[in-house]
Length: 145
Image: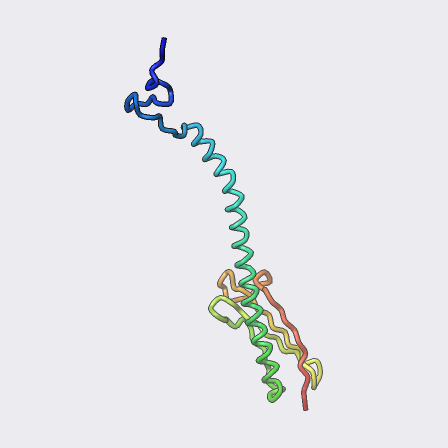
């Protein structure tokens, strides 16, 4: 018995006998592919979240370092002509979320110890707690004349 070429499996479809069968995915294939995609994406998203958190911490530390360096340079420049002035300050708010504390300790009549502490005020209480301190810079300033 001779087979009809129009009735072979590659031409069978619900539309008629002469139209080619269309390829598609079964439900099982779609579920397996989705599961594999989820398994691959979860670690990637976790890694991206971790990178974002570390980038934010680096940004906070960099900004705090810039604030502390600027204040320390300002104190050193002013001390040339105003050595006798006190430069101490406590929890001065900078840019709304950063706090800066400066301590000025006289070591002798001609030598002072300046410490600048700067940090990100995470809890918003306007007090720089130990966990919020990001940068501590220290220097000695001597009387020039």
